[in-house]
Length: 214
Image 1: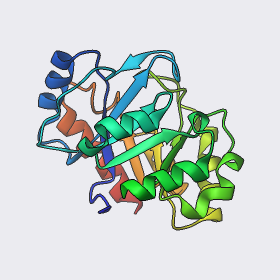
Image 2 (image 1 turned 60 degrees about the vertical axis):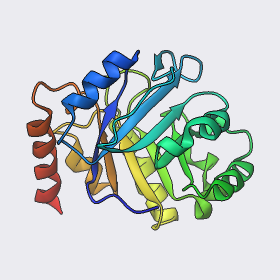
Image 3 (image 1 turned 120 degrees about the horizontal axis):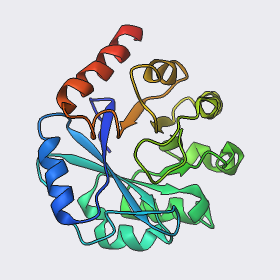
């Protein structure tokens, strides 16, 4: 998989195609890659993009699968997105899932809820390309930022410096700097960019903070 050139991915949550199309139009020209939050109402408390959606060809996409049995979704819709990120809590056998990804020629990416320790990934970390660390409890825009989760970023990078870390949740001008300093490679922005009245300006401001500490 080709590595992204832009480190910030605006997130997309929608309940129907009209809402999705409106958000994609709003984010046109803001970023190259969008982060799809897909939720089934079982793995997390709400639903998002839990319908047969149509995507714009203007973007590339990552999909964060906050769903049960994510392999079924990947079999059906995986070709629409470049990176599928599954919840560690929903995978019974990580080794089996890693082999599944290899057969599909997909990068291996796991996400960790705040309550899930990184010990659940450490035995498999050398075979994992990306880890998404949730710095909020997932499922909603605007959830409370949990800075203590950055310790997971530090430990993951220490264990395997090659693994790419994505942080999702609560990214603002006040939080993104410390998140980057912890070792984060990519940043998901929902409320700050996607819900902004001026998403292009908000995206640029986050990028300026990252440049100032690089």
